[in-house]
Length: 169
Image 1: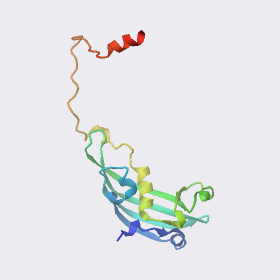
Image 2 (image 1 turned 90 degrees about the horizontal axis):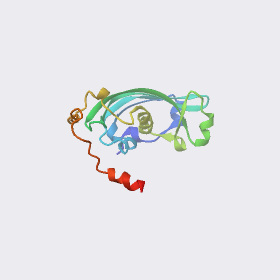
Image 3 (image 1 turned 90 degrees about the vertical axis):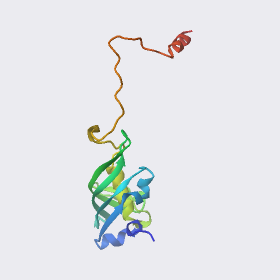
C-alpha cells in the first residue's frame, strides 16, 4: 500500500475547501530525488494549504527537516538543514500557464491531480544545492597536500614536449 503523501489528490476539491494537509516524508522514498541524488537520506515534515487566487488553485507549502547528502569534495555524508516555504499555482495543462498570477510559479498538475510528494520534490529540487559541499571545506577529509618543489631544484619533466615539435613540421 502506498503512503498517503504519494497518492494523487484532487486539486480543485482541496482548493475549494481550503484544505490543509500535514505530511512527514522520508527523502529516500521520493523517486524524483532518488534518481538525481545517490545516497540521499533524511526526512521533511510540514503542511500544504490549498486555496484559490483569481480562480487558480494555489498550494502554500511549508516544510522543514534535514537532508543527508554526499559532499562532492570529500565524498563523505553531510547534513543540510531544510527550511522552506513556497506558494505555487497548480495548473492542469501548460496552456493555463498564461493565466497564473505574476507572484506565483506554475506547477503542472495533470488532470487536476497532484501528490504531496510531487510538490515536495519540486521544492527540494530548487532548494537543495546542485553540488553539495561541506561549508568552507571544514568537514572535508582530504588527501595529503602536494609536495612543493625546492627552489629551482630539478627540471620540470614534460613527457609530451616532442608532440609540439611534431606539430611544427
